[in-house]
Image (cartoon, rainbow over all chains, first blue to last red; front, side):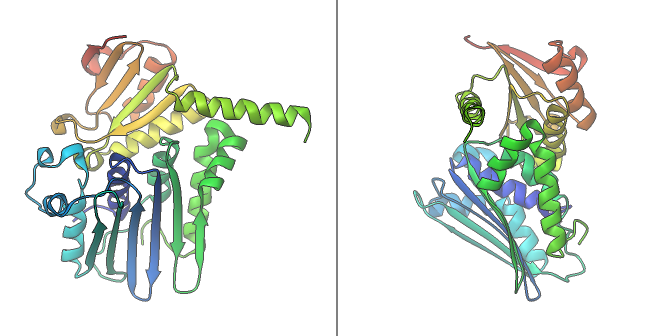
Length: 181
Length: 122
């Protein structure tokens, strides 16, 4: 089992970047008793064959051109081990949406981990991509948009990293999503 | 809007364009395939971004690659400057900070931690 779920999020975001995405939307949601992680992009998408290979735990990285789909097999493994679900919607030219749904209170569920410290450096080191991060539960939604990222860069320059990480941590706290939970 | 506001906005836009056009002095590439991530590449990326921010360095581009076929040596960090690529292997957070301090700032490679140096067509 993976050590924390932010590792899955990072892997999925990296897949989107490798697929040439211009927009990447990340969602962490607690819906009822389900924890949902979703990464959606407008990259070049995968054919059925590529998707099958990406979900094959025995694939070698050489089987997948440009590395799209790397890490998906690990996400699927997490879904299976926790009795959850992995949904992948992808087609060439139509982008990819990967959604992992797992039981929130499963005793073996890995913690969320350092979501802010994982995602914010990825966002800031890829200025050519528009990111959004949405945190949601059954009643509320919290959102970090590309405008927030730009505003932080304009106001704080290189220190935008700290500003944005604090913002994301505050969002996680507001939504009751903890690093170790 | 005051003239100085306009100038500031223009300078910021120019700066973003400069960075996007790849005219940064140095590019740092962190190997972040699944094995790189498992080996701590995200902590390395975070440490690099953090160190650059702390020092107020803004003429460096940081980016990521996928698997490099060097899984045993991950996390990998490449320093691209001019026509030269210096590759560091088994980078941890401490080494990542040293790469910024010694290589990026002072221009001296940390020779005992370098895996290879490649000269590319400048």
